[in-house]
Amino acid sequence: MKTLSNLQTVLAAKVNATTIRVIVTLVSLVLFALAAAAPDAMGGVGMG
Amino acid sequence: MIFTLAALVGLVAGMIRAKMKANTYFPIELKYSWMILLAFVPQWLVFFLPATRELVPNTWIPFILISTQLILLVFVWLNRRQPCIWLLGLGLMFNFLAICLNNGWMPISPDVLQRLQVPQSAWQLWERRGFSKDMVIPVENTKLWILSDILSLNLYSRFKIAFSIGDILIAGGIFAYFWSSGGSKTLTKEYQS
Image (cartoon, rainbow over all chains, first blue to last red; front, top):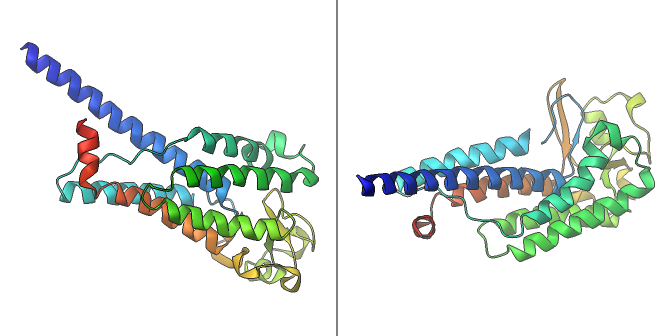
């Protein structure tokens, strides 16, 4: 039971780590693009 | 929207790729990510946030644009070993060169604006285009014209965009980064450690 609980904790931590890494990378690369790119959006929809 | 779309499509494609290879999807870590924020915040205040962008004089823009893009170039160099970063770096370098050679502005020609059916009252030669990074410059006065905003997309009235080859490479680089994260076996090892 204790092993199962430990496994659950480890799994939860890893799922969180994956989700956090995905979100951080996603936000980082979109911000990179917004700062590095130089499009000129003329309608209501932008390049962001 | 296009860059967010490139990232999301790349993320989904990378996840499917990882599943097909029986790997766990785990994006490769970008080092020194705080440098992106350092470069983005001044640009956000100058180009995106309505409350502040109106207060910034146009004379400051070239300095802010060049210095923040320099920070991004350093970031790319520090992450040069990461997959597909070279594509982001090449796109950034193309835009950086076009901006540096044209006095700190991304050039956009009257031809492109006419192609996008932007009314003549909305732009003026040698003036900044709205709150964008672009300056309307005739083709004959544009240095390294090929790297300026020469491409256009006019899907419907709310989706008119002028963009550069560098912008395409950046969008492609984002997609490729997420895609490549789904294919490496070393990622699984990193995840397990």
